[in-house]
Amino acid sequence: MKKTLFTPATIKTAKIMIGVLLAYVLIVAGIYFIAGDAFKYRDSRSNIEMPAAEANVAELTYDTVIEENFSAFIHRYDTVSVVWGTYYNRPNEGTAKMELITRSNGAVVLSKTFDVSALKDGDVVSMSFDPSDPMREAIVNEALCLRLSATSEYGSAVTPMMSSAEAAGRELFVNGERIAGTLCFSATGTDYIWIGTHYWTIVGISTAVFALVLAGIWLIHASGKKSYTVTAVKSFAGYGFLIKQLVARDFKRKYKRSVLGVLWSFMNPLLTMLVQYFVFSNLFHSAIENYPAYLVVGVVCFNFFSETCSMALTSISGNSRLIKKVYIPKYIYPMTTVMSSIINFGISLIPMLIVCIITGVHFKISVILSLFFFVCLTVFCMGLGLLLSSMMVFFQDTKYIWRVLSMMWMYATPIFWIPSILPEQYAFLFQCNPLYHFINNARICILGGVSPEPSAYFWSALFALIMLLFGALVFKKTQDKFIMHL
Image 1: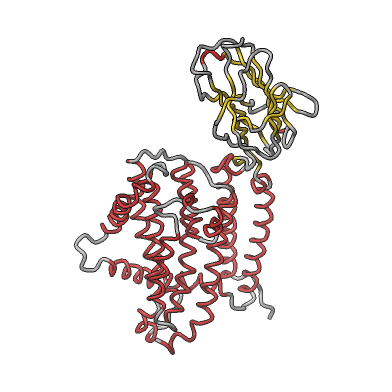
Image 2: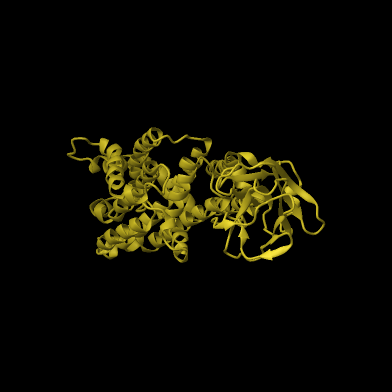
């Protein structure tokens, strides 16, 4: 009799997988629409920053023309600004004109005329492109000239400011004569993000790949072969009652004989934040906007990470009696510790939100996106928990090494400090630290009110999945040997 692939059990599995695939599509689509322009554009990496003003260029009278030649690979120009100065704050008369000109054909793409009588020393005057102006994109990497002229008479004219520092690709001229230095001006705009531009193509390809993976898993399961993924899911469903008991036990054990009990999950991040705030506020308060909110987000995330991994560390060795007596899939033990910590994490989010509200954080829809990075943090903790619980069975010193490692990890993660205090040559260290990605991106969503760039989602998900796969692989390879070492 020929065996059919379609049985009630395999059809049910197929429905679950289709649901998972649809959930994936909804999530990636939701992220795109919530993120808005943050997925399409970013501040241009070729923006010309305003140099420090050191001197006057020249009195800008009716017979004087000041020009700065430059080029910048800015995809969409937004604003060009110039710093102006006055001579001893004397009264000024007349008008000044700023023009942005293409050097290839002399076409004026942007201009502004303004009254100089209201200018004060150090004032910045800006001219901005209309968002619908096609020229803001047409001049990308074009050789440009910023021309300044005026109608003022001698003794009543203003002057643009300059810096003595030279800049590659920039030349400053006064009435056609080259002078040393650069004009104090800035050119800012945005660049297209490649991932955002091709987002739906990437989503389509990734969805197709994900669908093929799920189809492969289903075919293995339907043909009667053992599928580790399906078996793991079925085990969680089959041992649901036991999982609830283990989660409840871990949660109660944490607050056993405690007077305040679960309130400690509420108070712990607040107390930790207060201590670190009083210790470090003098160092970083002025450099970080809304330092209390910045700090509490980092504290809540790291506390969850530290608690989850510490509990998972002894999840196998601490349940040795139960493991020896009753057969239960061993990965359930570290997984239940993670689930227990998730409850504490959910409670600790309440004081985090309270601190944010009190300190004036204006929540926007982007706060929903922080859930993605919290999920990535949770998945990362699951993988690391599986790895640590396996190591602890064979190497008892793991718990002592982990104490030192977790403390080093805390100081290496920008929880109470900012990355900008370190030299640029050490920036790669942050890119190697998964917690930096999870915490920093969550802060952007909650405190910044915007979405991180698309690459932030990719790297966070990649770190989480690699850790989960590596931890699961090590656990699977070693779990049959646990019984001999417990």
